[in-house]
Each structure stands twice: as C-alpha cells, then as structure tokens.
Amino acid sequence: MAAVSDEAHYRFPPARAYRLNRCLYGIKSDPEYCARFLADPNAAMDDLELDPEERAALSPIDRDALVGRGAHPYLVFMADLRLRMARDPGSVEHF
Image (cartoon, rainbow, N blue to C red; front, side, top):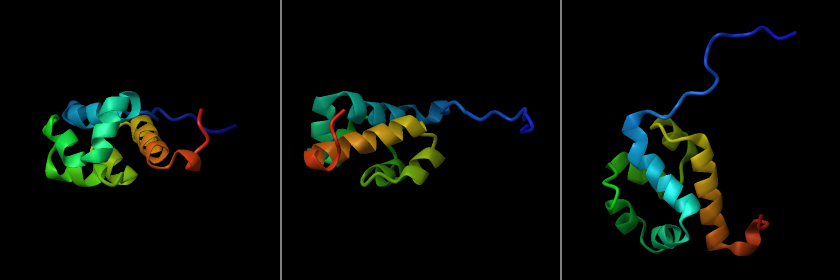
C-alpha cells in the first residue's frame, strides 16, 4: 500500500493569476474570444492587461511557463486544445 502524504496534491491558482486564467477560460469557453485571440493575440490580451511574461507564455501556449505563473493546468490544456481545433479542425477529433 502506498504511503499517504499530508502534502496537497492540488494547489488553487493564486489570485495574482486571475487575469491569466480569465484569458485561458475565454479561449476555452468563448468562441468569439477564441476567434479574436487567433486573429490578433495581442489585441485580445490587451483587454485583460496581461504582463509581458504572461503574453509570451500564451502565444504560443507554453504549458510549463503558464502553470509556473499560476495558470490552472486544466485551463491550459483546454485552451491549447481549442486553439489547435480552431486552427486545424481535422487535426483533433471533435468532442
């Protein structure tokens, strides 16, 4: 039997990453925002006042950098998937 650890296996995103997670959520859930992000990532990110490091990690998606800055791993995965599906619908099976 595996040992049980008291260390948390999940950490909630820090408040400082709210805008970053809001951007990822918009890409994942809002088709209009996703289309805006694809057409002009900088303009889409301007609305959320993201800092230069967040912008660099978002375009293109850099999973490790985003999670390191407090992005929720699920949102990173889903935003990346939505962007890939939008760029090349045949590359990913629709679900």
